[in-house]
Length: 159
Image (cartoon, rainbow, N blue to C red; front, side, top):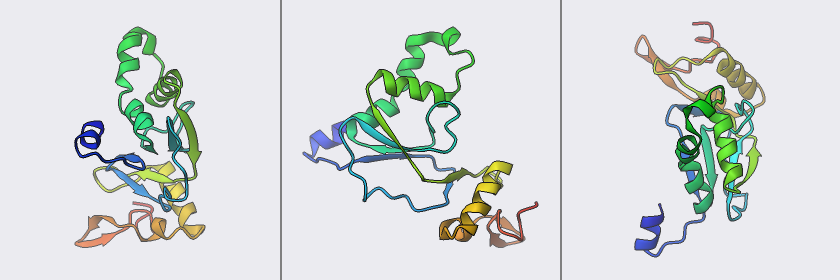
């Protein structure tokens, strides 16, 4: 990111890190938020006493810190990390590097390689669809008998 920015004399408004195995249930709204220096926006869901590590957007510094959390892992060692989940590690790393975190209402669920959703993800998708989030109702993945179908709509929910 930084090399490309410097080489081409480009100043980016922000950067996004997202997992490819997520289905987004509501719109990813980044244009209405100002990205302050040394800051990140992270979904409030799935924090597990830390910060959700599935999606983030922020400025260059915040995202560089986010992308280098292995530094904290290496510095602290395996013994220190016992019992600390990746979300908690991310929180410690961001706090140690003075990155300001704002949580958002972004809802995304992890999709297994089979196209299935876990129990919690199915519940979130159903609730998001009921609240009118069109992304939760119309998203498609997987294949069932040659017909593509959403794994959490009424037809596939109990499979």
